Amino acid sequence: MTAHYQEFRLDDPAVIARVIMRWPFAAIVANGPEWPVVAHAPLVLSKAAGGREGFDAVEFHLAKINPALADLGDGIPVTLDVQGPSAHVSPAWYMGRFANSDADRSRTAPTWDYLTLTMRGHLAVLSDAELAAHLADLVGQTEGENGWRISEIDPGFFTGLRSHILGYRVRIESFDCIAKFSQDKSDADIAGIIAGLCRRGRGQDRSVAELVGSLAGITG
Image (cartoon, rainbow, N blue to C red; front, side, top):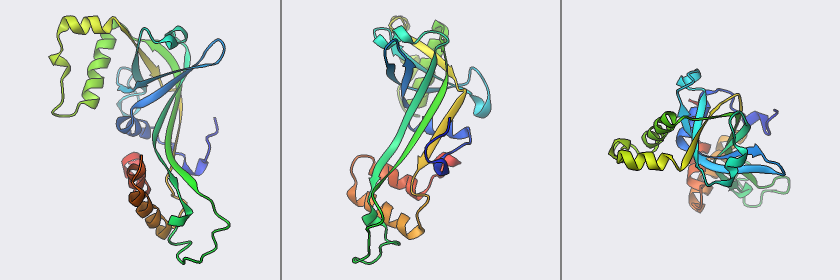
């Protein structure tokens, strides 16, 4: 699969873990009988399969009442799509290219900076024991050092909870990660973009400003 914006593509598989740890929520897409079926869930890095970076798969769970389950059976090919932060970028912020107030801006246009991670693989349904471990991993991944622990849950309640959900593992067979954060701009333009995003300060502007300033947290 050829990704859009090849110059912003990240090919190191290690970016998968870094992106999921920061932005774990994903759309799960499969072919339905009439049109694509889409479900949404947080992802957990799976160590069950081993592989690079200690994992080569992700896990998620869905409520059994979710109508998407009818098309999410064992062995079904799926696409997992993670949307990181994104924001509109104005040419008015290009302080290098258009430093003067009377500069000609007729041969430029606004753009959008963003991060996406698209993964493809086949579903494997988790056993109840694997589902329990998955939920413990999800809690550990998201609750933080002083958060709630899975050990606090009543065993009977936990068993009942699991009876209402279904867990899945997807071994990652291929992926595309695009991190477009003004890398093609000059240092002066980048400084202006960061200032403009922070000044506007709406939606995900500050997260995008951080990534325009440095992609080190994603690229290693």
